[in-house]
Image (tube, rainbow, N blue to C red; front, side, top):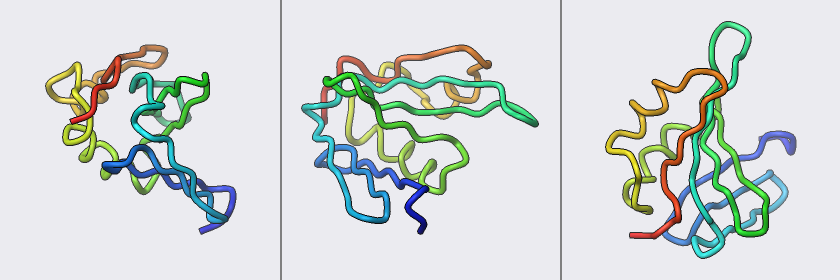
Length: 108
């Protein structure tokens, strides 16, 4: 893995980010909400899941990231979602749209 490609994972501890040079943990207590949004991209639409932190920063995962499926699969077991089917909700997002997936975050 190169340093310019961050990896994101969802665990019982929180949202973990590894830039290849060391990891950082954003505990669930620091995650204010989980949102999704879509942007127009060459050849289609790029979709993102964003973990919005209490300090104003966010950790984002895009649908081209290798960990995308793992992050989506882990969400229902970690937070109380505001949508029944996050994968369908993300698929329905058009460029420029935003959706709250969980917020305020309550862990399971």
